[in-house]
Length: 316
Ligand SMILES: C[S@@+](CC[C@H](N)C(=O)[O-])C[C@H]1O[C@@H](n2cnc3c(N)ncnc32)[C@H](O)[C@@H]1O
Image 1 (cartoon, rainbow, N blue to C red):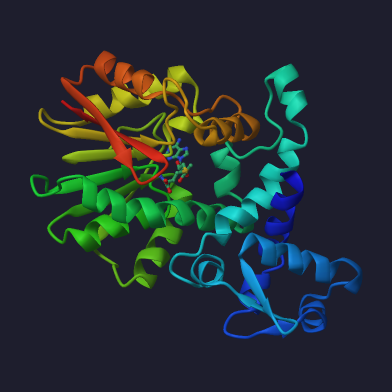
Image 2: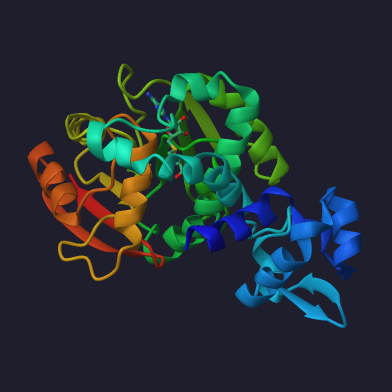
């Protein structure tokens, strides 16, 4: 299905769905707007019609409801940030998958966060990708976990605060914090202000390998442990245990792998991580619960978080 993937990823790269926002256009008009040669364009558009992402009536193309909701830039549920990065980085990396199988080495570098935060254009694209994910997981986490007993929550590696924004919006009593590398702070301030939530959560700058974690009733590590080696994951879970007071809670979510996988989705995501980081990968629920218990957590459990992620809960 690499051909179909490229057909869709190219549409996102060229921003076709934003061009078709609220208008219908002929193949010629699409070519003109996007600067395309006519040779492949009509058949590319017709292939997209077959996917259901766009429709064609009387030779004019328009967005499907799904494309309007998820693929038009600026739409609240926009997932194009994730897909653009996939087209730019993951698609070429998968082309060199054999090399990773032979050497164990990644084919793209998405795990060097020091480099990432030092490159503003790259960081903006990365954050748009992260927001595509936390935009769905944030409302889920606000709903499926009982926040009534807690006063404060710190999102460790919480990027520009998109996840925390959903929690503090849904649970107004919560004091929110984001702990991330210092370079993220201006992005956090701008993002929260843009959401009308300035002052509802604070930014704690730091490096989770060298600095203490902030004090809060609940610490979250979402899509963080999968960036690191098993030894580093153990260290981070242990550090969370040290930072929490008795009764404090660590929430970890990732695309955890089932012990007996029934479908390949999370295995493929894990291979993405292997292709794009030095030591990262997804892991099983059992491994995560074992790290939590080794760290000293008394009660541990897991539950689904949305259709793809697993939430592991550990109480000190
Ligand atoms: C894969 S992103 C996950 C972001 C966010 N939790 C989410 O799910 O949208 C990993 C985050 O960890 C942060 N990070 C990486 N290394 C870090 C470190 N040493 N100390 C603090 N934060 C770090 C990155 O800046 C980034 O925001």
